[in-house]
Image 1 (cartoon, rainbow, N blue to C red):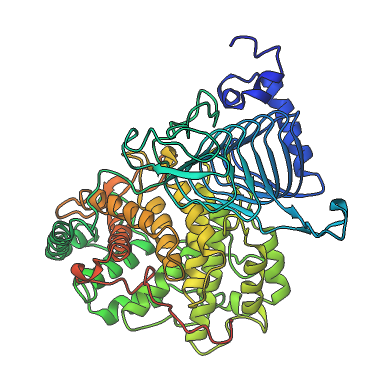
Image 2 (tube, rainbow, N blue to C red):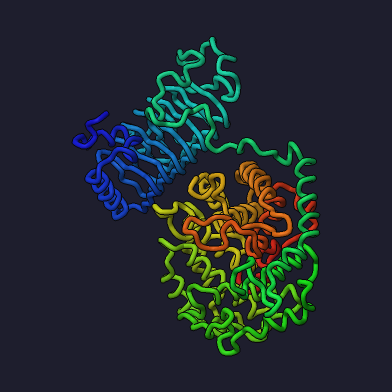
Amino acid sequence: MNQQESDDGLFDHCPWLYAEQASQRQRAAQEQRRKRLLGGAGAVRLGEGCFVAETAAVYPDVLYLGDRSYIAAHAYVTGDIRTGADCTINPFTVVRGTVTLGDAVRIGAHSSLLAFNHGTSPDLPVHQQPVTSRGITVGDDVWIGSHVVVVDGVTIGDHCVVGAGAVVTKDLPAWTVAAGNPARRIRDRREPRGAAQGAEVPGGAARGAATSGSEAAGPRSRPAAEPLTGPLRGAPHPAQEPSAFAGDLSAFAAAARAQAADLLDRCRQPGTGRYVDRPGAEPTVRAHCDAVEIAQLLLGEAPPHLPAAEHAARLRALQDPVTGLVPEYGAAPPVPGPAGLPEDGASAYHVLCVGYALDLLGSSFAHPVHTVRTTTADRLVRQLAGLPWRDRAWHAGSWVDSWATAAHWNLRLGTEAAAPGALESLFGWLHTHADPWTGMWGSPTPESGRLQTVNGYYRLTRGSFAQFGLPVPYAERVIDTVLDHTRDPRHFAPGRENACNVLDVIHPLWLCARQTTHRAEEARSWAANQLAATLRRWHPGRGFPFGPRPDGTGPGREPGLQGTEMWLAIVWLLADLVGLADVLGYRPRGIHRPEPALPAEGTA
């Protein structure tokens, strides 16, 4: 097709072509279409890379359209419609009522998902009968062919295929290939294609018709025979090869313990007694804290260069007694923000790393974090509302992490966490502003997809819900969002993973697994793949490199203390998710500790 520049109807009917072929004028028109939807009467959220045809009749009460999903020409969409990523509502399709689609659902042209019904009492005309709605739910990786009708109350399980012309009146279990009127099971999709062909099914369709004539997604769609969201292939799974995994983990932990003293030595400046992240770098407060965390994990004691009391004395002396904050070496005392903390910078992270290093050394801050202790509820709420959630969700989440951790240290010192009602206001604000579709705070960006949102979620929940032992909201939706993020090749293609991005996935998966078994096998399979890859990153005597960052900042590929501290915690979380953490012989007790750092008394 080469008429796309002049034919505005092409992408309405073939939206899979839009991303690669649309002109700037056509992209501007689509942006206006999006703005009209977002500014309309319904609650609308459109993910990254979505397309909605100009000729589609879209009048929702709620429309949450996942990343890379589209609504094609002359579709009719009303009610409460929520889709995962990579969903397609093709031309002339009707989707009405309360309809929930998982990831990668392809709905062929002229199909109808009708999630409501009229009563049929004989004493009233049909148009006066009450309308009922139980809703329709469709799982992940489902192909619904053309001219299919799905009626109210039906659930279609993951990986199903529904043949052209079928009328689905009852639930379909996962992996079902169905056809006919009413739809009946033809075979399990995992069976060989010709294993059960030849017999007749109700409605006159032959077995094998489930894919005949179906127009699920157009010529650029993924083949329906390849599951999009099943367990990852290619990595040993603990349930299948526990001895191999256990042996590798045990050998890794033994080698790391044997080499711990050497990797700490290479990162200590003999003249100053300070620690650097890696040879040639400048000494930092964080590097000292990372050394304490590594030594406690692998050696069960303080770094051997000084007694624990001397390590603690040096770190305690860094705290500014007026603000309670900790500046970088040689820097002036930090200037607090309107709600007690700077919005960024080393001093905000020092609330975490210095506090936990002192805790591991059997000590504590010398002073409360006064700037947080005096924060009132209204100042805190104003600050939360003003954080850059839309385009810098990591920075917003890290600020919450630091503020909540400062409140925690204040409580540990026996003072007020903050002004009366402030800590309660924090959790109230977070609960009422979490997106029920993603379970998170913030929005994806064209530049980095869900990276900011997911990484910000880790920092935010680490310091708040996890640290105070409270359940996170919308745990199942968080898992969906995180697993979708792991498929982004910008961040998880081979050679692109770094400690921050992997930690910020495994911690939410691990945390939410305390509340739900939703997609547990997929999460464990991802963890198994990452665990195998992570163990290969260890450099004998030097530890782990942090890994590459797209902007070239950070420690990068050179092994150092920050990478080692983070990857050691990641290994434990990965191993715990697959059921093998005990083999390691260590358990994080600092920043990445799995247990709540404080009972949730007074914060529920």
